[in-house]
Length: 145
Image (cartoon, rainbow, N blue to C red; front, side, top):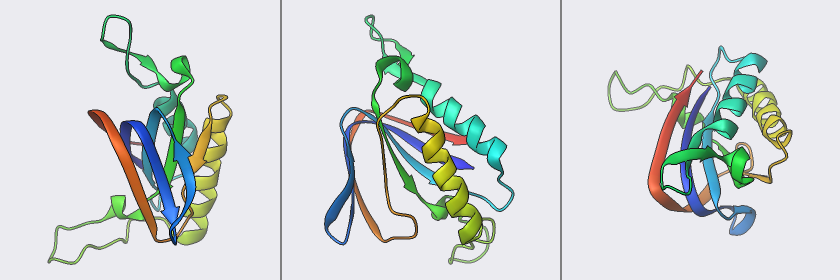
């Protein structure tokens, strides 16, 4: 699994002009699922993201997590995180998980982060989405299992 994690002051996702997910302060996560990913990857990545200490404490140091502050999370599926651009100019997506596996693990990821008691919003799997965000920092972290 691959995730691009952005600290945001707000973010939203639209499908066909309708807002289907919106958060205030928290994290926007673009989630890619690979052909070899399993449920153990979901467990690892969910815990890593929820406990990632990238929010400022009273001294201004990045020392607090999403869980510590009970901030919000917006999860958007993004198979293009598995693009391979080594050959030619057209990306190959052969390492992205097939639709059924990707949907299963995407939904498991959303349910797993909800278990931490956080408010979680999500994009629509396999939809053409418009994502808007106000980056806070900006802080952007790349994670991979």
